[in-house]
Image (cartoon, rainbow, N blue to C red):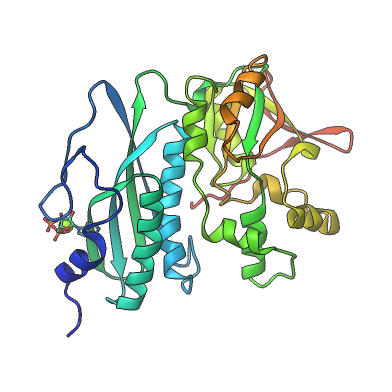
Length: 317
Ligand code: ADP
Ligand code: MG
């Protein structure tokens, strides 16, 4: 007997993630019913992953389940939000139980890690696509915004840049030296939720890097009405990305490749010690990569020269 829609939902998506006390009603009725904690605001985001656009159709389902949730948690992280609830709209070509078991495992493991509960969704048949909506708490006036960068701020990134981009090149058949950890970064990005929380009330502007540093920092610059200069030497690169850039001369990769899901944020000069204190014990590399300037535009310092950079991240249209 093939699996029916409701059995499928019941089996794979009904008892997912943390059982939260602010969920009055989860999967199973016409709507989820939630009881938000008083005095807090909700940050809400949604992202769709489409086969052939956002992932290769033969991707391991567990890593797709992980990534579909991770990219949304990363958006919450960039706002300094504490993740609480998610919904999942999934379109499947068929009800393949092995596929669903693996997908659900990847999704639920990450949900549990972050105390998130899956509270509803939609299940349809068609070309494979996964849409996740995530909701999280932010204290009033304490969230992080793209529009809050000021001239003189230092620019920082968490973790490393270019790993996911290098791994993607390798998957597409390029002879590049992507390491297992670069592949892991592409397939199972770790959303910087704890780091986003640590930046509340401290960082000025913040964004998560999904489309590449140049493009995403570009959004901060535009919305804040400022410019920036980045020192290429200070970009945090894995050994393999560093090696690739040296050998190929493709120094744009760490600036323009997407999918790293690190945070890029700005910090007022003089608050560096506070930042270091908040990141103590977080096991997250932090790099200061440049400075916000009053003059609009994005510039890079490379080989002793400053060049203007046109932000060229991934755009769907
Ligand atoms: P309706 O027809 O009222 O929209 P559905 O038949 O779409 O209800 O869904 C039944 C229940 O299962 C709802 O509570 C819905 O939120 C939940 N649901 C459906 N698909 C999923 C999914 N992929 N993940 C989590 N919950 C789901
Ligand atoms: Mg429905």
